[in-house]
Amino acid sequence: MLILVGVAVVVVGFAAGFNPLLVVMASAFVTGLAAGFSPVEILKAFGKAFNDNRYVSAAWLILPVIGMLERAGLQARARDLIRGLKGMTYGRLMIGYLLFRQLTSALGLTSIAGQTQTVRPLLAPMAEAAVESDGGELADEDRQRVKAFAAATDNIGLFFGEDIFMAIGSILLMVGFLEQSGVRLEPLDLSRWAIPSAGAAFAIHGTRILIFGRRLTRGTGA
Figure (spheres, helix red, strand yellow):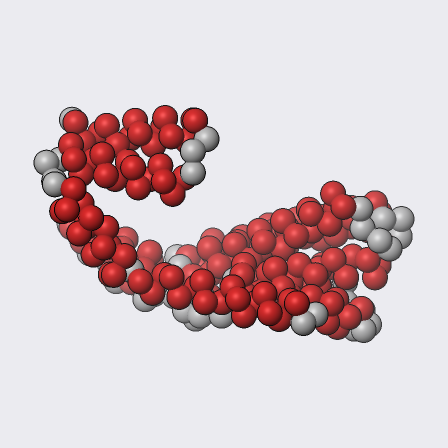
């Protein structure tokens, strides 16, 4: 039971407002000590975990590239592109992106878009421009809500689209877990049943997009 002291470290650390990364590392270190590992063995475990998952840090390479593009006017160009398209509304833009995100995720292309490389530099400013083209300048609070909605749209499209791809990690994890429990299923069986959920998510969030867009347009005086 001593190894559960790591949970207490997490609770106390988060409650005290300490840096989450430091809290998690301290919790892991305390748990290792309680389990009988030496400090060197714990550090070796940290190093092995980092080495095994070093591809995760590759995402950080995108940040300086996006920063340079934004400094060169990427967001301004994205806004100008939307303002120059006749008939482009907030609803059409966001629903189109939601469909794109779900379809590409269903094909296993989960990294083709995302918060860093798409939402912040492209989708969010495009959404702002689409609303302003219909109704005028956005208030700061509404602008933040537009950005948050763009981020949420990306998350929903990815979350409900990726499980349709039978080789995604979550599907393989469920297949392995069920097999250990004596239930044999093929990955296709699970991915096929993810299609109705994806369709429902598209319909529900698509409706939310339209309602949100109309509310913004009325709020800006269109």
